[in-house]
Image (cartoon, rainbow, N blue to C red):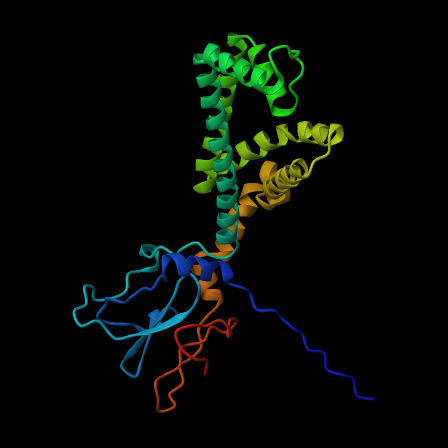
Length: 298
């Protein structure tokens, strides 16, 4: 009885994040303005039938271009002079961090708006109180009890009970919290390590309060906020390897170097262009046949 040969099915590494980045920021091509292309440059630029094929350093797609009529350089600079764009899981993490930064930006806008409202209320307290009494009397009558209003009107009434000094404390607390969120927002947008720690701690502090709020009064919005914050905490703690977990920052740097830079480009070498008496097909990376752009596959 013949044994069936086992075939190992491998899934191609997705480069969807690289394609998204290139769709917004453009492809990163090298050697479009050089006079001479060397054989050693074949991993990123190749010549075939009077055309030059340029490999995007981010998404690995190949694009045909005519040689420059007036080149500004003789040869492609050395690798140490070429900046390889962010790619791989490092690029994915950049998108996630910026998504969290956008969420923090919403917090900054809401908290800043509340702080402005508090300070405006303090400055016009008597006028607002007069208008409030007029509205209440118009709705419930002048003989209505002070406890008659319910809902938002009843909640608004409590603001007149709070002393101005306490209102100032609330306003400054909102400003301080908005400032903290702004620091997180900027740091996360630029992928700073300190911002990851700051966001983790600032988010974790409010988790017990959110659990208490869910326990005392369940609400869909409360649940969504809790899930989002827990996802941020877990991602920063495990995904970004904070506090030395999963190898810590050293493992994070090693992973980023393995997924990006020249190491990743060398790991996916291009194939050879085939001359079939027509416009040449683009060189095909050995491990990424599908998804190659700039021409059909051979």
